[in-house]
Image 1 (tube, rainbow, N blue to C red):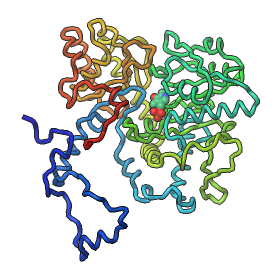
Image 2: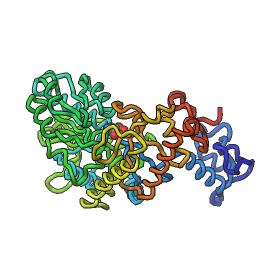
Image 3: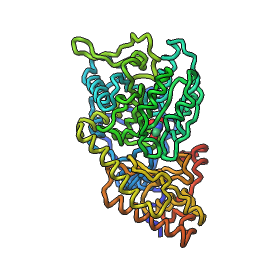
Image 4: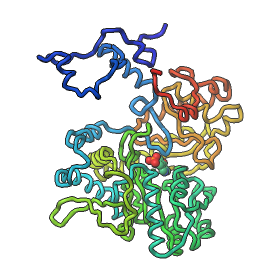
Length: 486
Ligand SMILES: *Cc1c(COP(=O)(O)O)cnc(C)c1O
Protein backbone atom coordinates (compact mmCIF):
# COMPACT_ATOMS: atom_id res chain seq x y z
CA UNK A 1 0.00 0.00 0.00
CA UNK A 2 1.21 3.51 -0.79
CA UNK A 3 1.99 5.73 2.18
CA UNK A 4 -0.14 8.78 2.69
CA UNK A 5 2.87 10.94 1.88
CA UNK A 6 3.55 9.50 -1.53
CA UNK A 7 2.96 11.55 -4.65
CA UNK A 8 5.00 14.58 -5.50
CA UNK A 9 2.23 17.00 -6.37
CA UNK A 10 0.44 18.95 -3.66
CA UNK A 11 -2.65 19.45 -5.86
CA UNK A 12 -3.39 15.75 -5.48
CA UNK A 13 -3.95 16.37 -1.76
CA UNK A 14 -6.27 19.30 -2.27
CA UNK A 15 -9.85 19.25 -0.92
CA UNK A 16 -12.28 22.14 -1.59
CA UNK A 17 -12.58 24.54 1.33
CA UNK A 18 -9.65 23.21 3.33
CA UNK A 19 -7.20 25.91 4.41
CA UNK A 20 -4.10 26.31 6.47
CA UNK A 21 -4.43 29.98 7.35
CA UNK A 22 -6.74 32.63 8.80
CA UNK A 23 -6.50 36.29 7.98
CA UNK A 24 -6.76 38.95 10.69
CA UNK A 25 -10.26 40.33 11.24
CA UNK A 26 -11.03 43.61 9.57
CA UNK A 27 -13.93 46.04 9.58
CA UNK A 28 -13.92 46.23 5.80
CA UNK A 29 -15.91 43.97 3.55
CA UNK A 30 -14.18 41.90 0.87
CA UNK A 31 -15.56 44.21 -1.80
CA UNK A 32 -14.22 47.31 -0.03
CA UNK A 33 -10.78 45.75 0.09
CA UNK A 34 -10.90 44.69 -3.55
CA UNK A 35 -11.92 48.23 -4.50
CA UNK A 36 -8.62 49.55 -3.14
CA UNK A 37 -6.68 47.47 -5.74
CA UNK A 38 -6.42 48.99 -9.23
CA UNK A 39 -8.53 46.99 -11.69
CA UNK A 40 -5.58 46.12 -13.90
CA UNK A 41 -3.96 44.20 -11.05
CA UNK A 42 -7.05 42.12 -10.24
CA UNK A 43 -7.34 38.50 -11.37
CA UNK A 44 -10.11 37.57 -13.69
CA UNK A 45 -10.36 34.07 -12.24
CA UNK A 46 -9.38 32.83 -8.80
CA UNK A 47 -5.85 31.40 -8.61
CA UNK A 48 -5.75 27.63 -8.88
CA UNK A 49 -4.08 26.87 -5.57
CA UNK A 50 -4.00 23.63 -3.65
CA UNK A 51 -6.39 23.67 -0.72
CA UNK A 52 -4.62 21.90 2.13
CA UNK A 53 -4.17 22.27 5.87
CA UNK A 54 -0.93 23.52 7.42
CA UNK A 55 0.29 20.07 8.59
CA UNK A 56 -0.49 18.64 5.14
CA UNK A 57 1.53 21.36 3.46
CA UNK A 58 4.39 20.94 5.91
CA UNK A 59 4.52 17.15 5.58
CA UNK A 60 4.30 17.45 1.83
CA UNK A 61 7.33 19.71 1.57
CA UNK A 62 9.39 17.93 4.22
CA UNK A 63 8.83 14.62 2.43
CA UNK A 64 9.56 16.17 -0.91
CA UNK A 65 12.85 17.59 0.41
CA UNK A 66 14.06 14.11 1.31
CA UNK A 67 13.41 12.55 -2.08
CA UNK A 68 16.50 14.17 -3.48
CA UNK A 69 19.97 13.75 -2.07
CA UNK A 70 21.56 16.65 -0.22
CA UNK A 71 24.31 17.30 2.28
CA UNK A 72 21.91 17.77 5.21
CA UNK A 73 20.64 14.25 4.54
CA UNK A 74 23.72 12.18 3.83
CA UNK A 75 27.33 11.75 2.76
CA UNK A 76 28.25 13.59 -0.45
CA UNK A 77 31.82 12.75 -1.56
CA UNK A 78 31.58 14.57 -4.92
CA UNK A 79 35.24 15.23 -5.73
CA UNK A 80 36.39 18.78 -6.51
CA UNK A 81 33.04 20.16 -5.31
CA UNK A 82 33.83 20.22 -1.56
CA UNK A 83 30.34 19.26 -0.47
CA UNK A 84 31.07 19.77 3.21
CA UNK A 85 28.52 20.38 5.90
CA UNK A 86 27.64 24.08 6.07
CA UNK A 87 27.25 25.26 9.66
CA UNK A 88 23.73 26.65 10.11
CA UNK A 89 25.13 29.54 12.13
CA UNK A 90 26.47 31.06 8.90
CA UNK A 91 23.01 30.97 7.39
CA UNK A 92 21.64 32.69 10.47
CA UNK A 93 24.22 35.46 10.01
CA UNK A 94 23.42 35.79 6.29
CA UNK A 95 19.74 36.28 7.06
CA UNK A 96 20.10 39.06 9.66
CA UNK A 97 17.42 41.54 8.76
CA UNK A 98 19.87 44.45 8.33
CA UNK A 99 21.82 42.41 5.81
CA UNK A 100 18.89 40.85 4.04
CA UNK A 101 16.85 43.97 3.57
CA UNK A 102 19.53 46.49 2.70
CA UNK A 103 18.75 47.82 -0.75
CA UNK A 104 21.62 47.42 -3.21
CA UNK A 105 20.98 50.93 -4.57
CA UNK A 106 21.16 52.58 -1.13
CA UNK A 107 24.10 55.01 -0.78
CA UNK A 108 27.37 53.79 0.77
CA UNK A 109 26.86 56.16 3.70
CA UNK A 110 23.98 53.94 4.89
CA UNK A 111 25.94 50.71 4.41
CA UNK A 112 29.18 51.27 6.31
CA UNK A 113 28.70 48.18 8.47
CA UNK A 114 28.14 45.96 5.45
CA UNK A 115 31.12 47.44 3.64
CA UNK A 116 33.25 46.97 6.75
CA UNK A 117 32.38 43.26 6.67
CA UNK A 118 33.24 43.01 2.96
CA UNK A 119 36.46 44.96 3.37
CA UNK A 120 37.59 42.74 6.23
CA UNK A 121 36.74 39.61 4.28
CA UNK A 122 39.08 40.90 1.56
CA UNK A 123 41.83 41.28 4.19
CA UNK A 124 41.26 37.75 5.53
CA UNK A 125 41.35 36.26 2.05
CA UNK A 126 44.56 38.16 1.36
CA UNK A 127 46.07 36.70 4.51
CA UNK A 128 44.94 33.16 3.60
CA UNK A 129 46.15 33.32 -0.02
CA UNK A 130 49.10 35.73 0.04
CA UNK A 131 47.56 38.04 -2.60
CA UNK A 132 47.36 41.73 -1.58
CA UNK A 133 44.85 42.67 -4.31
CA UNK A 134 41.36 41.25 -3.79
CA UNK A 135 37.95 41.52 -5.44
CA UNK A 136 34.72 39.98 -4.15
CA UNK A 137 32.87 40.74 -7.35
CA UNK A 138 32.96 37.42 -9.30
CA UNK A 139 29.89 35.31 -8.57
CA UNK A 140 31.30 31.89 -9.55
CA UNK A 141 34.61 30.12 -9.77
CA UNK A 142 34.33 30.24 -13.54
CA UNK A 143 33.64 33.98 -13.48
CA UNK A 144 36.76 34.42 -11.33
CA UNK A 145 38.73 32.56 -14.02
CA UNK A 146 37.20 34.74 -16.71
CA UNK A 147 38.08 37.92 -14.79
CA UNK A 148 41.62 36.63 -14.09
CA UNK A 149 42.20 35.89 -17.76
CA UNK A 150 40.84 39.30 -18.75
CA UNK A 151 43.46 40.74 -16.37
CA UNK A 152 46.16 38.69 -18.17
CA UNK A 153 44.88 39.97 -21.51
CA UNK A 154 44.86 43.60 -20.34
CA UNK A 155 48.31 43.26 -18.78
CA UNK A 156 49.80 41.98 -22.04
CA UNK A 157 47.88 44.42 -24.23
CA UNK A 158 49.16 47.39 -22.20
CA UNK A 159 52.71 46.06 -22.59
CA UNK A 160 52.19 45.77 -26.33
CA UNK A 161 52.50 41.95 -26.19
CA UNK A 162 50.51 40.08 -28.82
CA UNK A 163 50.21 36.71 -27.10
CA UNK A 164 47.49 34.19 -27.79
CA UNK A 165 48.11 30.94 -25.89
CA UNK A 166 47.46 29.67 -22.35
CA UNK A 167 49.04 26.48 -20.98
CA UNK A 168 46.65 24.11 -19.18
CA UNK A 169 47.30 20.61 -17.73
CA UNK A 170 45.23 17.68 -19.03
CA UNK A 171 43.84 17.27 -15.50
CA UNK A 172 42.27 20.75 -15.46
CA UNK A 173 38.62 21.40 -14.60
CA UNK A 174 36.49 21.91 -17.71
CA UNK A 175 35.86 25.55 -16.81
CA UNK A 176 39.57 26.37 -17.37
CA UNK A 177 39.68 25.79 -21.15
CA UNK A 178 36.16 27.24 -21.44
CA UNK A 179 37.29 30.48 -19.76
CA UNK A 180 40.37 30.61 -21.98
CA UNK A 181 38.13 30.30 -24.99
CA UNK A 182 35.73 33.00 -23.76
CA UNK A 183 38.58 35.48 -23.48
CA UNK A 184 39.76 34.64 -27.00
CA UNK A 185 42.98 32.80 -26.18
CA UNK A 186 43.90 29.31 -27.40
CA UNK A 187 44.57 26.38 -25.07
CA UNK A 188 47.81 24.41 -25.14
CA UNK A 189 47.38 21.14 -23.24
CA UNK A 190 50.15 19.80 -21.01
CA UNK A 191 50.28 16.14 -20.06
CA UNK A 192 50.56 15.13 -16.41
CA UNK A 193 53.50 12.77 -15.85
CA UNK A 194 53.34 9.28 -14.33
CA UNK A 195 53.32 10.81 -10.85
CA UNK A 196 50.20 12.80 -11.74
CA UNK A 197 51.90 16.21 -11.76
CA UNK A 198 53.24 18.66 -14.35
CA UNK A 199 57.00 18.41 -14.99
CA UNK A 200 58.99 21.66 -15.43
CA UNK A 201 60.72 20.35 -18.56
CA UNK A 202 57.34 19.84 -20.24
CA UNK A 203 56.47 23.46 -19.49
CA UNK A 204 59.85 24.66 -20.78
CA UNK A 205 59.32 22.72 -24.01
CA UNK A 206 56.20 24.69 -24.96
CA UNK A 207 56.83 28.02 -23.23
CA UNK A 208 57.55 30.85 -25.65
CA UNK A 209 56.65 34.49 -26.22
CA UNK A 210 53.30 33.52 -27.71
CA UNK A 211 52.18 32.19 -24.31
CA UNK A 212 50.29 34.71 -22.15
CA UNK A 213 50.33 32.50 -19.07
CA UNK A 214 49.59 29.20 -17.43
CA UNK A 215 46.63 27.96 -15.38
CA UNK A 216 47.38 25.40 -12.70
CA UNK A 217 45.09 23.81 -10.12
CA UNK A 218 46.69 22.97 -6.80
CA UNK A 219 46.13 20.41 -5.42
CA UNK A 220 45.29 19.25 -8.93
CA UNK A 221 42.15 17.33 -9.75
CA UNK A 222 43.89 14.03 -9.03
CA UNK A 223 44.15 15.30 -5.46
CA UNK A 224 47.93 15.57 -5.79
CA UNK A 225 50.05 18.53 -4.74
CA UNK A 226 51.93 20.05 -7.69
CA UNK A 227 55.48 19.70 -6.42
CA UNK A 228 57.31 21.86 -8.99
CA UNK A 229 55.38 25.13 -8.79
CA UNK A 230 58.38 27.34 -8.10
CA UNK A 231 60.40 26.00 -11.05
CA UNK A 232 57.39 26.14 -13.36
CA UNK A 233 56.60 29.71 -12.29
CA UNK A 234 60.21 30.72 -12.97
CA UNK A 235 60.07 29.25 -16.48
CA UNK A 236 56.78 31.01 -17.27
CA UNK A 237 57.88 34.34 -15.75
CA UNK A 238 61.24 34.31 -17.52
CA UNK A 239 59.44 34.46 -20.83
CA UNK A 240 57.06 37.17 -19.66
CA UNK A 241 54.04 34.97 -18.90
CA UNK A 242 51.76 35.08 -15.85
CA UNK A 243 50.79 32.26 -13.48
CA UNK A 244 47.12 31.63 -12.67
CA UNK A 245 46.06 29.31 -9.89
CA UNK A 246 42.62 27.71 -9.91
CA UNK A 247 41.98 27.92 -6.16
CA UNK A 248 38.74 25.94 -6.07
CA UNK A 249 40.60 23.24 -4.14
CA UNK A 250 41.76 25.56 -1.38
CA UNK A 251 40.17 23.27 1.21
CA UNK A 252 43.48 21.38 1.32
CA UNK A 253 45.69 24.47 1.61
CA UNK A 254 44.42 26.80 4.31
CA UNK A 255 47.05 27.81 6.83
CA UNK A 256 49.56 25.52 5.13
CA UNK A 257 50.29 26.80 1.62
CA UNK A 258 49.87 30.37 0.33
CA UNK A 259 49.73 30.50 -3.48
CA UNK A 260 50.79 34.16 -3.49
CA UNK A 261 54.11 33.22 -1.85
CA UNK A 262 55.32 30.75 -4.48
CA UNK A 263 55.02 32.57 -7.77
CA UNK A 264 51.33 32.67 -8.69
CA UNK A 265 50.09 36.06 -9.91
CA UNK A 266 46.33 35.54 -9.94
CA UNK A 267 43.95 33.14 -8.18
CA UNK A 268 40.23 32.69 -7.75
CA UNK A 269 38.61 31.25 -4.64
CA UNK A 270 35.40 29.27 -4.61
CA UNK A 271 33.95 30.81 -1.47
CA UNK A 272 30.86 28.61 -1.84
CA UNK A 273 33.01 25.47 -1.71
CA UNK A 274 35.74 26.24 0.82
CA UNK A 275 33.94 28.76 3.01
CA UNK A 276 30.62 27.01 3.51
CA UNK A 277 27.74 28.17 1.35
CA UNK A 278 25.24 25.47 0.40
CA UNK A 279 25.81 24.90 -3.31
CA UNK A 280 25.32 22.38 -6.06
CA UNK A 281 21.75 23.21 -6.99
CA UNK A 282 22.86 25.96 -9.32
CA UNK A 283 22.48 28.50 -6.54
CA UNK A 284 24.53 31.67 -6.29
CA UNK A 285 28.28 31.25 -5.94
CA UNK A 286 31.12 33.53 -5.00
CA UNK A 287 34.47 33.44 -6.79
CA UNK A 288 36.66 36.02 -5.09
CA UNK A 289 39.76 36.97 -7.08
CA UNK A 290 43.23 37.63 -5.64
CA UNK A 291 46.14 39.24 -7.50
CA UNK A 292 49.69 40.44 -6.83
CA UNK A 293 50.36 44.10 -6.12
CA UNK A 294 51.51 44.66 -9.71
CA UNK A 295 48.15 43.53 -11.10
CA UNK A 296 45.93 45.31 -8.58
CA UNK A 297 45.16 48.18 -10.95
CA UNK A 298 43.41 45.77 -13.34
CA UNK A 299 40.89 44.40 -10.80
CA UNK A 300 37.20 44.67 -11.71
CA UNK A 301 35.76 48.11 -10.97
CA UNK A 302 34.44 49.49 -8.77
CA UNK A 303 36.92 48.55 -6.06
CA UNK A 304 35.79 48.57 -2.44
CA UNK A 305 38.20 50.98 -0.72
CA UNK A 306 38.76 52.69 2.60
CA UNK A 307 39.38 56.43 2.77
CA UNK A 308 41.83 58.17 5.11
CA UNK A 309 39.02 59.03 7.54
CA UNK A 310 38.10 55.34 7.80
CA UNK A 311 34.95 55.44 5.67
CA UNK A 312 34.31 52.80 2.99
CA UNK A 313 33.41 53.62 -0.61
CA UNK A 314 33.37 52.14 -4.08
CA UNK A 315 36.25 53.51 -6.14
CA UNK A 316 35.22 53.81 -9.79
CA UNK A 317 38.22 55.88 -10.83
CA UNK A 318 40.17 52.87 -12.12
CA UNK A 319 41.53 53.65 -15.60
CA UNK A 320 43.31 50.28 -15.97
CA UNK A 321 40.43 48.13 -14.69
CA UNK A 322 39.00 45.30 -16.81
CA UNK A 323 35.64 46.90 -15.96
CA UNK A 324 32.54 45.74 -14.18
CA UNK A 325 31.62 42.06 -14.14
CA UNK A 326 27.92 42.42 -13.38
CA UNK A 327 25.41 44.63 -11.59
CA UNK A 328 26.04 45.49 -7.94
CA UNK A 329 28.83 43.84 -6.03
CA UNK A 330 29.06 40.07 -5.61
CA UNK A 331 26.64 37.74 -3.86
CA UNK A 332 26.39 39.40 -0.50
CA UNK A 333 24.83 36.49 1.43
CA UNK A 334 27.75 34.24 0.38
CA UNK A 335 30.17 36.93 1.43
CA UNK A 336 28.55 37.04 4.89
CA UNK A 337 28.72 33.25 5.23
CA UNK A 338 32.40 33.22 4.28
CA UNK A 339 33.12 36.03 6.76
CA UNK A 340 31.25 34.23 9.56
CA UNK A 341 33.00 30.94 8.75
CA UNK A 342 36.45 32.52 8.94
CA UNK A 343 35.67 34.51 12.10
CA UNK A 344 34.29 31.46 13.90
CA UNK A 345 37.21 29.18 13.01
CA UNK A 346 40.11 31.64 13.14
CA UNK A 347 43.52 30.96 11.61
CA UNK A 348 44.25 27.80 13.62
CA UNK A 349 40.76 26.49 12.93
CA UNK A 350 41.16 26.93 9.18
CA UNK A 351 44.42 25.04 9.29
CA UNK A 352 42.72 22.19 11.15
CA UNK A 353 40.00 22.13 8.49
CA UNK A 354 42.64 21.49 5.84
CA UNK A 355 44.56 18.97 7.93
CA UNK A 356 41.41 16.98 8.61
CA UNK A 357 40.26 17.17 4.97
CA UNK A 358 43.61 15.62 3.96
CA UNK A 359 43.53 13.06 6.78
CA UNK A 360 40.00 11.92 5.90
CA UNK A 361 40.87 11.50 2.22
CA UNK A 362 43.98 9.45 2.96
CA UNK A 363 42.11 7.31 5.49
CA UNK A 364 39.43 6.48 2.93
CA UNK A 365 42.00 5.84 0.20
CA UNK A 366 43.74 3.27 2.41
CA UNK A 367 40.43 1.54 3.19
CA UNK A 368 39.55 1.19 -0.50
CA UNK A 369 42.91 0.48 -2.13
CA UNK A 370 42.52 -3.33 -2.24
CA UNK A 371 39.09 -3.32 -3.84
CA UNK A 372 39.53 -0.76 -6.61
CA UNK A 373 42.36 0.33 -8.90
CA UNK A 374 44.36 3.27 -7.60
CA UNK A 375 46.13 4.66 -10.67
CA UNK A 376 48.16 7.31 -8.83
CA UNK A 377 49.33 5.63 -5.65
CA UNK A 378 50.72 8.58 -3.71
CA UNK A 379 49.87 10.49 -0.55
CA UNK A 380 46.82 12.51 -1.53
CA UNK A 381 45.57 15.90 -0.44
CA UNK A 382 41.82 16.52 0.13
CA UNK A 383 40.68 14.01 -2.51
CA UNK A 384 41.82 10.97 -4.49
CA UNK A 385 40.86 9.22 -7.70
CA UNK A 386 40.01 5.52 -8.03
CA UNK A 387 39.41 3.68 -11.28
CA UNK A 388 36.55 1.25 -11.84
CA UNK A 389 38.55 -0.59 -14.51
CA UNK A 390 38.56 -3.86 -12.56
CA UNK A 391 34.76 -3.79 -12.14
CA UNK A 392 34.28 -2.90 -15.82
CA UNK A 393 35.62 -6.36 -16.72
CA UNK A 394 32.42 -7.87 -15.30
CA UNK A 395 30.24 -5.32 -17.06
CA UNK A 396 29.85 -2.91 -14.15
CA UNK A 397 30.64 0.69 -15.04
CA UNK A 398 31.52 3.53 -12.71
CA UNK A 399 28.09 5.06 -13.33
CA UNK A 400 26.50 1.81 -12.09
CA UNK A 401 28.56 1.89 -8.89
CA UNK A 402 27.35 5.43 -8.33
CA UNK A 403 23.72 4.47 -8.82
CA UNK A 404 24.13 1.57 -6.38
CA UNK A 405 25.51 3.96 -3.74
CA UNK A 406 22.14 5.74 -3.78
CA UNK A 407 20.53 2.58 -2.36
CA UNK A 408 22.62 3.18 0.77
CA UNK A 409 21.65 6.85 1.07
CA UNK A 410 24.93 8.25 -0.23
CA UNK A 411 25.76 10.48 -3.14
CA UNK A 412 28.24 9.26 -5.71
CA UNK A 413 31.80 10.48 -6.17
CA UNK A 414 32.50 12.61 -9.26
CA UNK A 415 32.36 10.24 -12.25
CA UNK A 416 34.55 10.06 -15.35
CA UNK A 417 36.65 13.03 -14.28
CA UNK A 418 39.53 13.78 -14.47
CA UNK A 419 39.48 12.57 -18.06
CA UNK A 420 42.95 11.03 -17.82
CA UNK A 421 41.72 8.24 -15.51
CA UNK A 422 39.49 5.60 -17.17
CA UNK A 423 36.27 4.89 -15.25
CA UNK A 424 37.30 7.60 -12.78
CA UNK A 425 35.75 7.98 -9.33
CA UNK A 426 36.96 11.17 -7.71
CA UNK A 427 36.33 11.03 -3.96
CA UNK A 428 36.42 14.04 -1.63
CA UNK A 429 35.14 13.14 1.83
CA UNK A 430 35.80 16.61 3.37
CA UNK A 431 36.71 17.36 6.97
CA UNK A 432 33.15 17.44 8.27
CA UNK A 433 32.55 13.67 8.14
CA UNK A 434 32.94 11.37 11.12
CA UNK A 435 35.06 8.26 11.12
CA UNK A 436 31.87 6.18 11.30
CA UNK A 437 30.60 7.72 8.06
CA UNK A 438 33.90 7.07 6.29
CA UNK A 439 33.92 3.46 7.55
CA UNK A 440 30.33 2.96 6.40
CA UNK A 441 31.08 4.37 2.94
CA UNK A 442 34.11 2.07 2.62
CA UNK A 443 32.07 -0.94 3.75
CA UNK A 444 29.39 -0.18 1.13
CA UNK A 445 32.01 0.33 -1.61
CA UNK A 446 33.55 -3.03 -0.70
CA UNK A 447 30.16 -4.69 -0.86
CA UNK A 448 29.53 -3.15 -4.31
CA UNK A 449 32.94 -4.43 -5.46
CA UNK A 450 31.91 -7.95 -4.33
CA UNK A 451 28.53 -7.62 -6.05
CA UNK A 452 30.28 -6.57 -9.26
CA UNK A 453 31.99 -9.97 -9.26
CA UNK A 454 29.24 -12.20 -7.92
CA UNK A 455 26.01 -10.52 -9.02
CA UNK A 456 26.76 -7.71 -11.49
CA UNK A 457 23.08 -7.42 -12.42
CA UNK A 458 22.38 -6.13 -8.89
CA UNK A 459 24.67 -3.18 -9.57
CA UNK A 460 23.79 -2.51 -13.20
CA UNK A 461 20.07 -2.35 -12.36
CA UNK A 462 20.53 -0.02 -9.36
CA UNK A 463 19.16 2.06 -7.75
CA UNK A 464 16.51 -0.22 -6.28
CA UNK A 465 14.96 1.77 -3.44
CA UNK A 466 14.97 5.42 -4.50
CA UNK A 467 11.72 7.29 -5.35
CA UNK A 468 12.69 7.14 -9.05
CA UNK A 469 15.08 4.74 -10.78
CA UNK A 470 17.39 5.68 -13.66
CA UNK A 471 16.56 9.00 -15.20
CA UNK A 472 17.31 10.51 -18.56
CA UNK A 473 19.65 13.08 -17.04
CA UNK A 474 20.55 14.82 -20.29
CA UNK A 475 16.90 14.93 -21.32
CA UNK A 476 15.87 16.35 -17.93
CA UNK A 477 18.32 19.22 -18.36
CA UNK A 478 17.49 19.93 -21.99
CA UNK A 479 13.70 19.52 -21.88
CA UNK A 480 12.93 20.94 -18.48
CA UNK A 481 9.27 20.71 -17.53
CA UNK A 482 8.60 21.90 -14.02
CA UNK A 483 4.94 22.82 -14.55
CA UNK A 484 2.15 20.69 -13.08
CA UNK A 485 -0.77 22.49 -14.69
CA UNK A 486 -0.97 22.66 -18.49
C1 LIG B 1 34.17 23.93 -9.05
C2 LIG B 1 35.42 24.20 -9.77
C3 LIG B 1 35.49 25.27 -10.70
C4 LIG B 1 34.31 26.09 -11.14
O1 LIG B 1 33.64 26.76 -10.12
P1 LIG B 1 32.13 27.26 -10.35
O2 LIG B 1 31.80 28.08 -9.15
O3 LIG B 1 31.29 26.03 -10.47
O4 LIG B 1 32.10 28.07 -11.61
C5 LIG B 1 36.72 25.51 -11.29
N1 LIG B 1 37.80 24.74 -11.02
C6 LIG B 1 37.75 23.70 -10.16
C7 LIG B 1 38.99 22.90 -9.89
C8 LIG B 1 36.57 23.40 -9.50
O5 LIG B 1 36.52 22.36 -8.66
